[in-house]
Image 1 (cartoon, protein in one colour):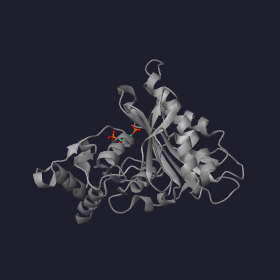
Image 2 (cartoon, rainbow, N blue to C red):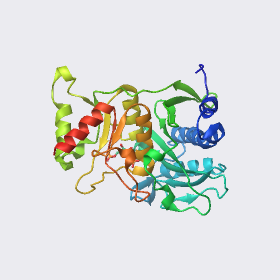
Image 3 (cartoon, rainbow, N blue to C red):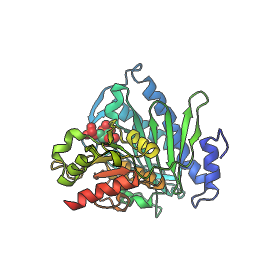
Image 4 (cartoon, rainbow, N blue to C red):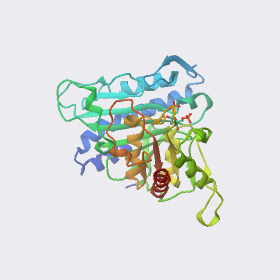
Amino acid sequence: MAAGTTLGRHLMEEGSWRKDGADDLRALLEPVALAGKILAREVDQAALAGKLGLAGDQNATGDMQKKLDVIGNEIVMDAFSGCSVVAGIASEELEEAVIMSTSDDARYLLCTDPLDGSSNTDVNAPLGTIFGILRRGRTGELSGEEFLQKGSELVCAGYVLYGTSTVLVYTVGAGVHGFTLDKGVGEFVLTHEDIRCPEKGAVYSANVGRHKDWEAGVRKYLDYVTDKDKPSGRPHSLRYTGALVADLHRCLLDGGMYFYPGDPGSPNGKLRLLYECAPLACVAEQAGGAASTGRGRLLDVVPEAIHQRTPIAIGSVENVALFERFVAEE
Ligand code: AFP
């Protein structure tokens, strides 16, 4: 694609040969891009505007909300408020799904974590916005049950990473493309066309401070990647930012794997299936990587609840397969 391709132009060209069509793709992704631009500005200015720190409430999954969590959720909701093709939104920050449009054109559902890694807000470390779009099978009154579709049903997924630059990455089911925000002109410009995740990598991302609580297979995997073995490139290097979006972005570009397993106190781990793990699993697979619960393909898991958690291993296909083997052997 030509140098200087904007997200809008890319969507028109991609959409011209996709089932959902250019108009739908633009209707779905332009609000994501708008929210990303506004959130990038809010994150930039948060310390100056007194928007760091806790908001004072817990969210639907029991996490203490940061001010930027609340602001992020409002920004995403506002961006989609004029989007008649989205019937409803399920968000990490909302107890239940909310209705956005009752139009007969409202053929889609948005799942989102508006601000991934919000413990990073106060320390100037990376943050993300995760989004996944599902089709809606019917019209009429929206029910929360309609969101309970496995990740393989996602028609579009991606993330915005607020790091050293702001990057929007999306897939509509055939390849993964990345756009960097040119803040001077306010446009996302194609900088990472057809991202391919290396088949293996020598980096792992995990909160190893918790390793004593992990099941035996996961602990053995950690022993394996930290063992010295020059021919196979071990030990692997540890990189963990506290924001899955940032850690996955590294895996997609350089190879490696992020994992967050369960433990006795939280057998399904910490991360949420519907609006965190499934959209990112969709991106990883589309880039030639993989995502697993440790015991099978993550995109095959049918959620039973909007805020359901899942263990996850995501990144390079060989790393994920090896992780699954360690888990299966125990
Ligand atoms: P927050 O958005 O609550 O900070 O959680 C971020 C996250 O879901 C994921 O992005 C991180 O990798 C992971 O949790 C960090 O969790 P730990 O603090 O337990 O390592």
